[in-house]
Length: 346
Image 1: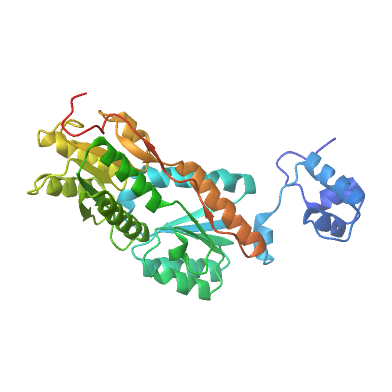
Image 2: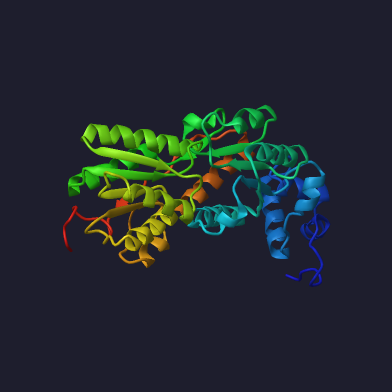
């Protein structure tokens, strides 16, 4: 079947002429609306496919339909984004679904939560996005109420207790923290510390509470040091503080892989051998954990798959106005060479 001249966009009129129907019939068939028979719809769709027809998303946007764009605002310094494997894998997972749906991701960095609210409001009211993702949920997050009131279609990436009326996609951090502590306790560790992320973040609060409760139930001595961000610099400072304390821990759990790698460097700097003198366990397993020596044990979850799941739920909201909150598979323990019974040579 001959196609229009190369470089010329195939239009609804082209499809109508080839199928022998009106442009109105083509529009009904392509938009899955009633008004044409199934036989005619099938013929139109076959012709459209043969001609290589694709939707004109710009025209759809101008007519008040879809923008074919979703928004993501990250309230964090630009210099840290490229250092964090989590968000690189998360965005890759999002894009895997956006590609299938022929959608684009509109990404913006913001200096504060208040600025993030303004960006989402501007995008939604200016018809620049069909929906948005809310990440790094906080305790009593001001975004939840402000963006609910303007009717923004969105999915909250975090525990349902933090998401308000928005559907949520999350991992069971509390259960994973308990698994990590039980593992270290079974190795014989009694003094276990945690280097956590910023206190205002909801998942930091959830992990801190679970860490304290699990340590108490296991009869462990515990300490928590919260950082200002998830950078290697903050991970180094927190580790140094713990290792120079009067009662030094024999194991440390980190809230991400970057801080754990930095902690390994500090331990080496201070003349400690991992895992003989100190066991280290990272969250958010990544290639970083396998590239260092010794390789870092980690609480691992498929961040790429997590991002894809978040995108799928957002499309549920865009299409139907609602979505069911869903828990992603919980992080699982991956033991490697950085954890061992205290004082034992491998």
